[in-house]
Structures are given as C-alpha cells and as structure tokens.
Image 1 (spheres, rainbow, N blue to C red):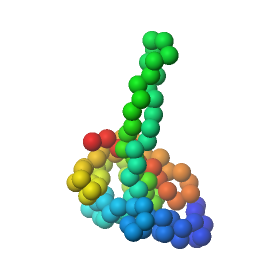
Image 2: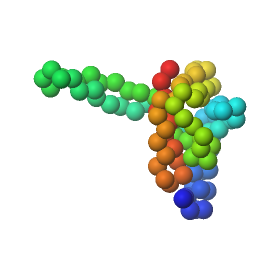
Image 3: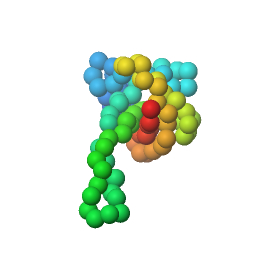
Length: 101
C-alpha cells in the first residue's frame, strides 16, 4: 500500500496543469497521463522486427480499482475512446492501463 507521502505526490503528478489530462472512466472524471509505449514485435524470420507504439494510461489505482479488460476510457484531447486491454497495478498507488482504439 502506498504511504501518505506517495499519495500526495501522486496528486501533484496527476494535476492537469502539469502532465495529466482529465478523462472519463466508469462514468467518473479521473486524471491520467496518456503515453505511447514503444515496443518491437519480433518476427520468427531472421532478426527482423516491427517497431510500433501503443497507447497506455497511467492512473491512480484508487480511480481504476475496478478496471478490467473491455472497459472503455475517453481521453478528451482528440475525443478518442479507448478500450482497456490490460490492467497493471504497480503496488505503489499507480496502475497502468494498456489501451487500444
């Protein structure tokens, strides 16, 4: 469980005046940090890989405690609605949501 010092740090990190953006999840407005994680998909032929990126949202765990695959989250910048394809709590008070359009 995150300590109180970390909880207040998360509140600072997730301010919309800094890094975060207000989003809609489960009918509530929550602040998230939207990112595009880089990855390489390895192919079975030689050493060739496909490089790409995928959207992820960093959220306060208490805001997405009921999140599961198939849920949706709307990020107003661009009005994009994403589908949650992975939920990864990090045991520090943050949860990473893997998303797809």
